[in-house]
Amino acid sequence: MAMNKNTVLAWATWVMIFVGLGLIALGAFRYDDVAGWGFAAVGVGFFSIAWVFNALKGRV
Image 1: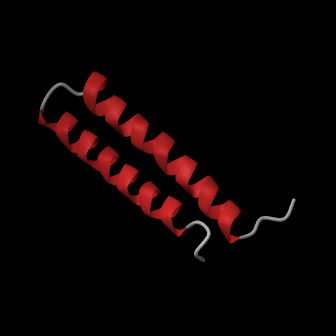
Image 2 (image 1 turned 180 degrees about the vertical axis):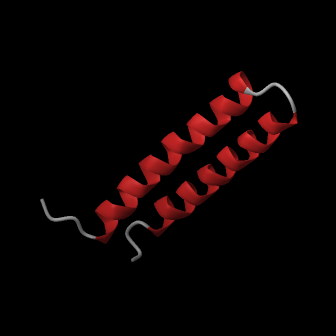
Image 3 (image 1 turned 90 degrees about the horizontal axis):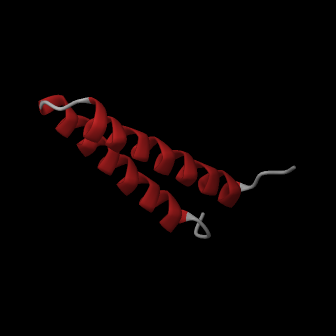
């Protein structure tokens, strides 16, 4: 299976979405103090990077 640039960006987008969901879940369910806000903020950051990867798909 040959992977071109668009396929790599698609896989990276999905990985970033799953990691972002995991971090938000950690912040929401595992940590009840201030650390939870940090985990959730980093998870939202992962979503924004995944959005950029998705926007780059087809342009690279």
